[in-house]
Image (tube, rainbow, N blue to C red):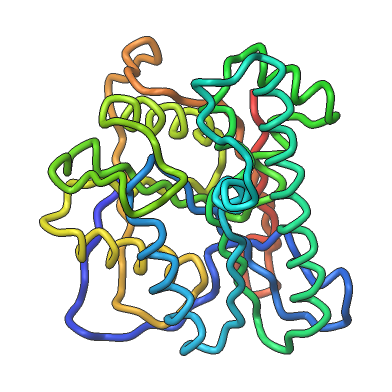
Length: 287
């Protein structure tokens, strides 16, 4: 777990916490391209958070891009997206089409941003490729992976530098749950909570996964926490934040009541002639 503490209005500039997977493969610039996925159950505040972040990072000298939610685009194009009416073949065809559209939008935007921007770039993705697993059965999901030649580590770990999971209002802020703000939303409160929990499980192996729940006093506090989290990841000036880690003892794996992943973390360091250490590689390997 972690604790956040602020020291007045003191500002701090620091190196990005993220090590971006997406360098400028299509140009000679050394500026990084950060790619951050926003996920979570319906009516979580993603649209509001993304709008705020695009404005914020622009003011700080980044070039933001937004990859829209593929399901909403498909709905507007005439696709039926309520999967409760799908046969198994319908589900395979729809979900694989959605994921191919999303991959295309992500990749073409990555290429365009690398070729045209002379600033550090942030790609914000409204939902990620692992989201689809929450809306289909295990059999359908595996059929999609087999048909397309994908695997979960590629879809989850290789394509996104960080994942921000915003918990649905149906879990902890029920009176604010509303089906009217997104035409692609059809889940009732219980289904929304179920989808949210499945999404948490699907993304749980990512090394930079951040959960933003509804424990704050207000929706504005929730959005502010999203802002602090992303600014910290990008190394942008902000109020100082301290992350504290706690040792749980005695600890038994069988007592864990939430979805979890087991992985090894390897860190490599260089030691300078003055004895100072500098971390150069941090890599996680799923077990």
